[in-house]
Image 1: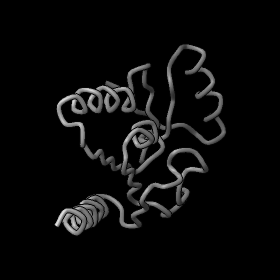
Image 2 (image 1 turned 90 degrees about the horizontal axis):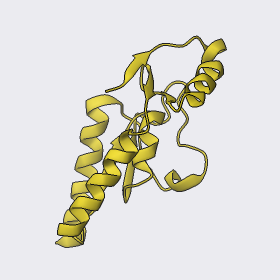
Image 3 (image 1 turned 180 degrees about the horizontal axis):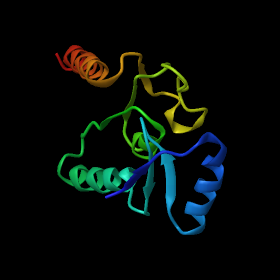
Length: 129
């Protein structure tokens, strides 16, 4: 469980620093900021990938996210997808790092998620016959 809140722009760095000083992470989500402990989405996906990887060695991992609080788990999957990319104040993609190869879907919300999944399934069908 996390805590969700809004922060005035002038106080964002102060809040991020205060959270880190207490062993927490303050990260911007789609609409709200999230205050999380050491077990965030990245930890959860890491555990799932390890567990499923033992049973399904050819597992293809796909992750869809729409905000910076999703980056930790998107960095772990083979096919990261940024939904709603390049809209509003959001950057088209994170700068550098392991998300440089992320698929960018301009449509936001359910429309973007649907588009991403249909594209991936279509590509997999072509590859696997």
